[in-house]
Image (cartoon, rainbow, N blue to C red; front, side, top):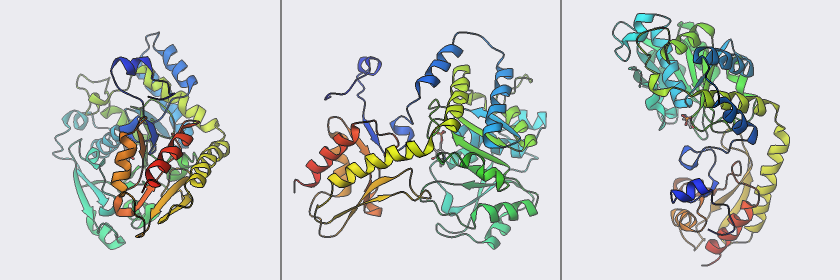
Length: 380
Ligand SMILES: *Cc1c(COP(=O)(O)O)cnc(C)c1O
C-alpha cells in the first residue's frame, strides 16, 4: 500500500482497500456512508425499540421521499424484489403469507421481458413464483407482452439498469398490465441519482418500485427500499417479518436491523437534500482530469460519456481501435486489479471499452488511476 489509509479493522483481517472506479457495485463495497449516517446508526445501536413501530415510521419517510402511498425499508433491492413478488401473490391473506413458498391456489407467474433478464432476477422467483419470459434479448412487443399475461400472472416485472433494453418501455408495460388488472413492479436498484427517479416511476403508474440503499443513496450496503400502492406494500410488510403472526414471512431471512433502518432513513434524507449539481460537477472534474491525462495514445479514443440511460455519472470511456498495439482490455483490467493499490474499472471486451466511473472515486484517487493507466497503456 502506498500513501493510503488502511483501516485497522481491515488490516487485522489482511484485506486491503481498493480504488473503486467501477461504480456502486456490491462486489467492491457499494458506497461510502456519510458521517451523519454512521452517527445515526451509532445512536440507534444504543437503545431498544419496538421494531414494528420503527418499520412503520421509516416506511413513512420512504413513502414521502418516493411520492408513494406507502414504503418499507428492506435488506437490499434484492430483498425488496422478493417481497414485491410475494406481495403480488399473497395479497393481504394471512394464510397465503404463511403458505409461501408453496404458491398453490395463488397467482404465481412473474412476466419479464427477455432483454431485461439479469443476474439479480432470481429474486423474482425466490418466494415461489415462476418466471414467464417474453420477447428476444433485444426486442419485446406489446403482442408478446399481452400473450405472456394470463390468469396466473401475479405481476409484470420491469428492470431499469445501465445498457438493458427497455422493450416496449415502462409506460406501455404499465398500460398493458393494468388493462388486465395486473400490477407492475420495478427493479430500479442503481437508478439513483438523479433523485427525481425516486418518484419518477411511481408517477408513471408503477405499483411498486425498489431501489438499493447501499448504492447511490449512500446508506448501509445491505439496505434497500420499496414503495408503492398501500395495499401491496402492506402485503409486502406482512411477507417480511410478519410480526403479528406465529409464522414468520418468506422475508424473515432478510430482516433489517434497527441500525440499518435508521441508517437508510438518514441517508435518504441527506440524499434528497444534497446538492446534486455540485456532486455531478465533482465527478465531471475527475473525469476531465483522467481524460486529459490519457490523450494521445495511438488506437485509444478517450471520451467523457454521461448518458444517464447507460452511465452512472460522467466518466472517461476508453474506446480501443484495431491499431492499438497494447494489452487487451481484460489484460489491462487484470494489471490494474493486481497493482498496488488495486484499481477496479468498468467495461468489457465485448464492448471494446474501459469506463472509469467516478461516483466512488475518492478525492486524489483520480491521480493514482491516471498514473497507473498511463504506465500500462504507454508501455507498449
Ligand atoms: C444491485 C442490483 C440489485 C441488487 O441490489 P442489492 O441492494 O444489492 O440487493 C438488483 N437489481 C439490479 C438491477 C442491481 O443493479
